[in-house]
Amino acid sequence: MTQGDSQAVISLRNIRKSFGGRTVLDGVNLDVRRGETMVIMGGSGSGKSTLLRLIIGSFPPDSGSIRLLGQEMVGLKRTALDDIRRRFGILFQSGALFNSMTLAENVALPIHEHTNLDREIIDIQVKIKLELVGLLEHADKYPAQISGGMKKRAGLARALALDPEILFYDEPSAGLDPVTSAQIDRLISDLTQKLGVTSVVVTHEMDSAFSIADRMAMFDSGRMLAVESREWFNTLRHTDEAHAEALPPDQRLIRQFLRGDAEGPITQRKHTDALARALFGDDVVISTPSIIPTRSA
Ligand SMILES: Nc1ncnc2c1ncn2[C@@H]1O[C@H](COP(=O)(O)OP(=O)(O)O)[C@@H](O)[C@H]1O
Ligand SMILES: [Mg+2]
View (cartoon, rainbow, N blue to C red):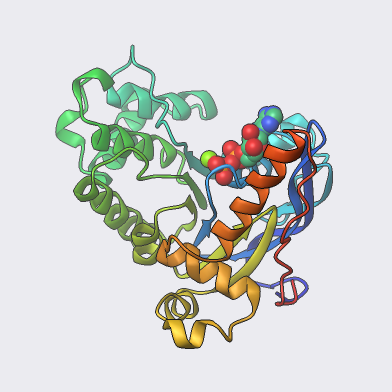
């Protein structure tokens, strides 16, 4: 990664974050370019949601810089933060719809909150957004009346309500069956193309990652191990056993993650961690394989 990518709409530099003395983000660097779909991958509990929440300004990092749409987010005042929040949409893991409101009302809510538009104009906006996600005919239903996949789509319509420049997705296909999950992936790709938005998608689901990504970032133990094109990751994923032996340690780890192999550097590390805990208890400071990134960050 070079210093300052001129096309970057998001730039993270040396982000650190600890919770109760436990380091979750340990010097994270990342550039996301305008119009691309960046997929951030990592095991569960690796800090992906924390990273997203930092980018959108939910809470500050302990140190480091976060530039979003040209604006430094760290130390930003409340009003400035509200202004920038209107320029991105978020689809969280749960979808987070209000159950007492219809889908149309859910989508209208952010427009009412952030604009002074007339009701008729808002109605049109809402219809356009629901149509984009294929839910126009269900506009008057309540969340309890629709399936999990439809709830995700409704959440997406709401994230689109204010015509965001960037869309953030946290595990968009979590809890969905494979077919519905593939439909959501298709929708994410379609929207990225149709609307020209920049998308940042956090996921641990490999099929989904490969079907939507332009570039991918592999995140592990609080660090970015690699930020590369989808093709780069695909080549690594399909590197055969004979050639895998010769790869640098971080690439072997990424390969295991991409393939979902039971054996490899990730599982060896887990065994070592588990043994350390069994011997010394939960408070033991695990210093293992800090897989040292061989790529310059
Ligand atoms: N607000 C918080 N307070 C304390 N610990 C937290 C908080 N948010 C996240 N964590 C911890 O940080 C780690 C990373 O969590 P998270 O970002 O949710 O991971 P992921 O999304 O990759 O599964 C976990 O160990 C989690 O328990
Ligand atoms: Mg998460």
